[in-house]
Image (cartoon, rainbow, N blue to C red):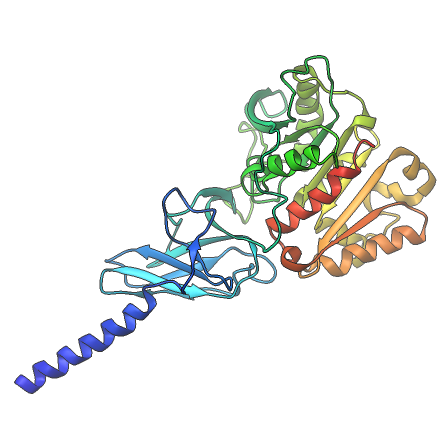
Length: 402
């Protein structure tokens, strides 16, 4: 009997020792800047490994599920199994990972839950956790000791949707004191599964603009960040594989923007209300939406257009559409297009699937005489995530309204 007790005790000690080896981050790790206040985890090591922690004593199985994109997300291909220590805390260290902003959730006994230790972000049509892995040498999106603009949340009634809608608006430094100054406007669209808060909280748009303006690299401008999740609740919902995002009729977002949003912004804020002082751009799905709005000849609202990592744009080189048929054939007449648009901007990250097609589109447009700018995002920002979008906007904004 004594021998049997000794065997069990030794086994228990061994198991606890193995579990305890997981219950710590690599030496030198620091809390991620995206953590909730005072939260120590997720923790980032000096070599860009990320340690996740979750207290769930009654759970039987816990995994980290990375946010989805074509390469599985900069955290790597998941899921990542976590190991429980003797205190009921689950741990795993992954990586080294790609620097940037990465979504994830925990899968706890089959249920997807957000990490209570991080900020909560609207993504994948609902709440998600995110971890910011700092990129060495990049600080253009961080707050600095420069004059800061304001980010305001503005609610307005939409006649198109018959509902109240929300936008986030960046007003440049001095907007409230320079009461006679009028400003150009950029309308900036989010990626498909996010909302109007994304360019502020994930994209750090306000800090990017503050820093560019302080460095005199970009003109002071208003940036309007709206939401493409627009539908009239009185209408039947269109079936969709994403149940948290009811589908509106095609082009409803465009109708709402042109009928409600742009007139409201011009009536409420000190804008320069003409097409030569309006720009529109977006990331991923939002980039395609931006071009569909900008290139509609019936509206003629914008003379600057940009698409960052635009999936819709790839149809121009993949087929069945071509550069002369996509966007209702706007590129059939290069001379007219070049006259009407001061800037047509494209970007893509070197590590995302769009990288093959976006520069090809740029080359095809150049060959037929359409003027466009292509910016390649490499290094840490090369994957399909927010560091990519931040870098694209940092390059895009100084080209506007010159």
